[in-house]
Amino acid sequence: MIVVCILDQREFCQFDEFSASCEEDEVIIVETAQYGRMRSGRCISGEGYIGCSADVRVYLDGQCSGRRQCAVSVASLTDVVQPCRRDFTSYLEASYTCMKGTSEKTKKPS
Image (tube, rainbow, N blue to C red; front, top):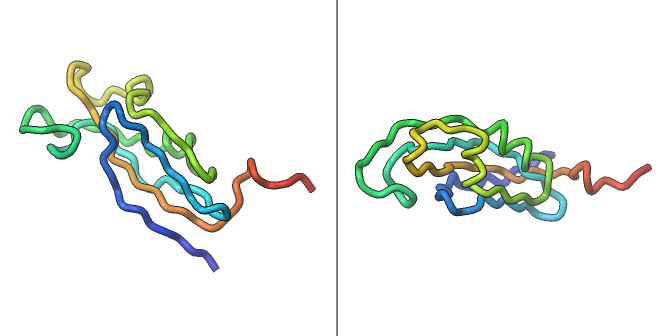
């Protein structure tokens, strides 16, 4: 039986840290991750320039999926991708689930 706990998609501003954690017998599965200026909200106020973004799920997946916990600085994403003009602040919109399982790092050798 597979049990999945779905967590809401959230905004992580430029100087925030995306952090994910699951219970002892669960691992993280990154569901969505968009980096850019998708819409006005908690991280971007006013109308300004919006509508540019890049899918960074593969990057976040490599940093977090299969682990029990992880933390990624949103500011570090500018080294990975620059979907908007450099002088505009971007943010991360991401979601993950926790799935029953064991991380490769926590498995005991046989």
